[in-house]
Image (tube, rainbow, N blue to C red; front, side, top):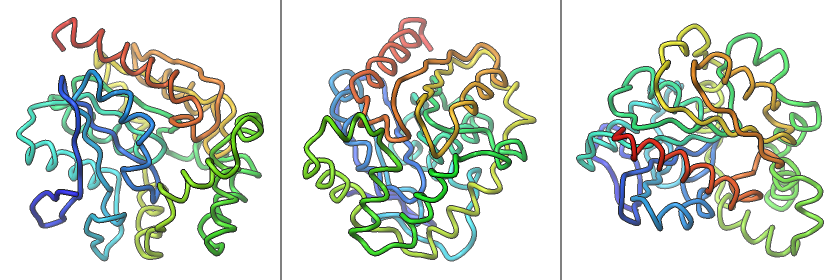
Length: 272
C-alpha cells in the first residue's frame, strides 16, 4: 500500500476512474474489508480505501483517538491525492468519522453515505447494541483467532446468509479481511473514539448535503433504530432499509452497491 506523509501516515490504495469515492471502514477493520464494494463501485468511480490510524499498515500513535481527529486523516489523504472533494461513505465507526468529516469540511464532501452507524450521544449508548451483539463484539476482541472469527461471522451476518453460503468461503473471506487483528492499544484508542462520538447537536447543519443512510434491518451490533434517528436529524437525508446484518456491505453487496451508485449518479448529474 501507498502512504500519506506524516505526522500520522495513512496507508491507502486507489482503483478505477470517475468521480472519487472514499470508503471509511469501521472499528479495527482494514480498508481491504471494503473489497466487495471496491470491486463494484470501481467500474464507474475512482475508489479510494485506506487503513484507519491504528489499523493495518497505517501509523498507530499512542494516544486516544477521536472521530474528529480521524476525519482529519481522511482530509489529509484527499490533500495528498490532490482531490478537492469526494463522495464519502462510512460504515459503523467509519460512518461516525464520515459525519465529523462532513461537519468540519463540508466543502470537501460531494455526498455522504452512512451505513450501519449512529450519531452517538447518551441515547445511542443506552441501547446501541442488542445483548447478543454486545456479547459477540466482546468475544471478537478477547478470543483466540479461531474463536474470534467464529464470533465475528455471527456478529456480522444473519443466520439466513450463513445457511446459504459455503462455511469455508465465509471463513476464508473473514480471515483475509480481518485475520490480522489490530493491536490491543489501537483497539482501545478506537473504542475511545466511538464512545466519545456525539454529532447529535450539529447534524442539522448538514441540511442540503446529499445524504444516503443505509439501514441494515437485522443488525445486532448497532440497532436499526439509530439509522432512523440519523434520518430525522439530517434534514433531507434519504433512508434506505436493507434486509441484512451489520456486515451488509458483503452480505447484501449488490443491493448496497446499487444504492450507492444511484446516490452518486444523482449528485454528479446535478453537478454536485
